[in-house]
Image 1 (tube, protein in one colour):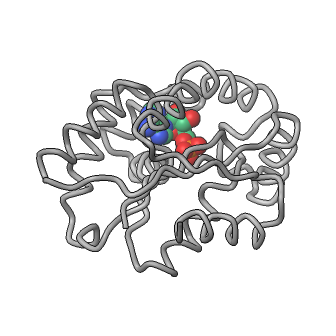
Image 2 (cartoon, rainbow, N blue to C red; image 1 turned 120 degrees about the vertical axis):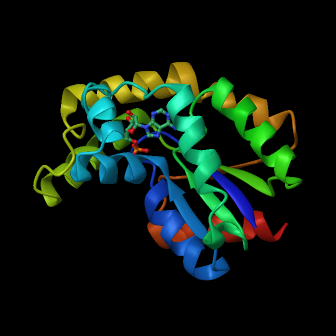
Length: 189
Ligand code: AMP
């Protein structure tokens, strides 16, 4: 099973990815987690990414495409994977197409988790309270910026993948269990 979870910050992509990983025994590729790990390890990648992330902007396509193409090669992705937070731009989606074509594999589905912006802001601010400020980008100002970046650069991916017949849209405002059930139903189709 090879999936993309598409949705704005706070939509619940990470939470749903964890449930899907258990169910299908596939790898969870969260590019945000990969970048945060690089920051906490103080690598060159982490240093380059930190300021961009703290502003709520996107790390360059070139860097992100490199990370994902290498990560997909890993043993744990053999059985499949969930991409959480990638692709985020049309050039990233085009690069992913090339990466998968080179490997002779395809995507099974793109799950788009939808939610209104006020709810998303509220959820992200709650996440910030519970996590002791672990994420410098979970502040009122930066979350608005991240939502704007999502609207401008990432939302067009829904159309990109809809034209390929891959998109299943899910209401992300329901409870975690209900959203998980809707995703399971969409994937069973
Ligand atoms: P996330 O944990 O997915 O919300 O990602 C946190 C931040 O990491 C984003 O706001 C971006 O700055 C950066 N990031 C994560 N994934 C990508 C990506 N695919 N392309 C560009 N930047 C990314």
